[in-house]
Length: 72
Length: 196
Ligand code: SF4
Ligand code: SF4
Ligand code: SF4
Image (tube, rainbow over all chains, first blue to last red; front, side, top):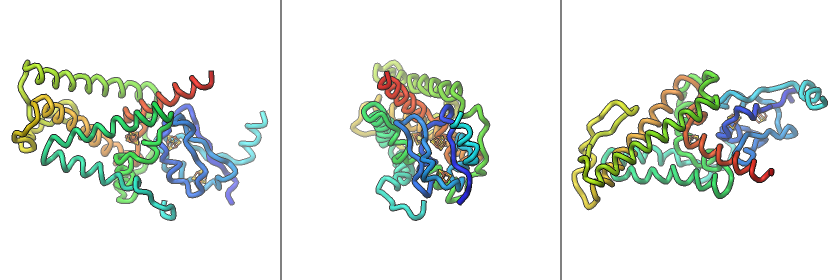
């Protein structure tokens, strides 16, 4: 399993749902029509959503980096 | 996705082709396009969600099928400004003004101030003769004028969507689609309202 996870820049996300439709793990949901939300426990870091997002707002981050970021 | 069970609404892309085909033969079918205007707003206003965009929009599905499955898209990220707030809201306002202009033209025909123009106007500029699509019927003239205006709007926006689909990613249109912007805006207002 990849050590990376998808993260969404929710400021620019247009909530189109393309990522959610494409994710093979069903890890993405659209939160109240506002932005995409990734369930990091389900995400396997495949990057399919990243390449599908028309606004190009999904980035794959290393799990360690994410934890360091959240720890702050 | 290949292994996901298909739902009936996964085939709505067929509707978006049928819509333009019907309007080609009889412009009055253009009225059916109002469904694609009203449904997403109902979802947003009542449900506070973008379920229409996320699951039901035939146009979005069509761009995906042509762009991804038929490989008609370069699949390159679009320039940042296309999905920026000012461009999205700017385009939405422009679109609404154009919609208002179209309603006004419909009103003028209704009021008898101008005659029926049987043309489809592309990109709000190019007039394409389309008189074969209407040769009289039980409808008042203003209803026919609205059909022409609305069909023009639908065709123009689909063409813009196809262009950005080819140039950038499959569903780049969805980043600045006025309906998408409007429904997300409504959802954000609703979500903020609930938080207070
Ligand atoms: S990286 Fe793959 S598994 Fe993770 S959210 Fe994106 S599509 Fe789903
Ligand atoms: S595809 Fe991109 S813009 Fe669309 S909902 Fe997902 S993250 Fe947001
Ligand atoms: S953004 Fe527009 S084209 Fe895209 S899914 Fe929503 S209504 Fe359809």
